Amino acid sequence: MSSKQKLKLFCERKEIYSFRKLFEALQHDTKLRQDLIDLVTVNETYFYREESQLNLAVEFALQIPNVKILCAPCATGEEVYSLSMMLQEKKRDSYSFSITGIDINSEAIEKAQRGLFSERSLHKLEERLKEKYFFKR
Image (tube, rainbow, N blue to C red):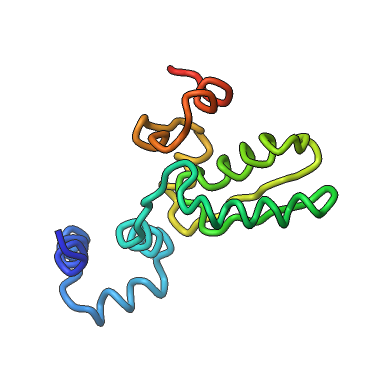
């Protein structure tokens, strides 16, 4: 379904029949605004996605004692957890760094906080890493 179709259905369900009415409603209705954000954001993520970029961030972080990392956007948390795993694999103690993930999509944040991931999210990980950092539910 195209973004245009998604937006049209969203508006129809909310009984909003013009973009002017949508714009006006978004000015005052924070729940409607968040629902629209959740609708249009894409949460394509998995562990070790863009591994070369993650490696650069990890190499930089290793040079800073007690480093604090902001991961934005973090979607459902795979990037945050990937950075943590990569730092620990480089023998960085977990108490010597902190990682904060933020995202604009409230549904994605809720999933990240639960820490539950599908097999698809883990497809790039070696079995050794899966066994070390995850357990099946």
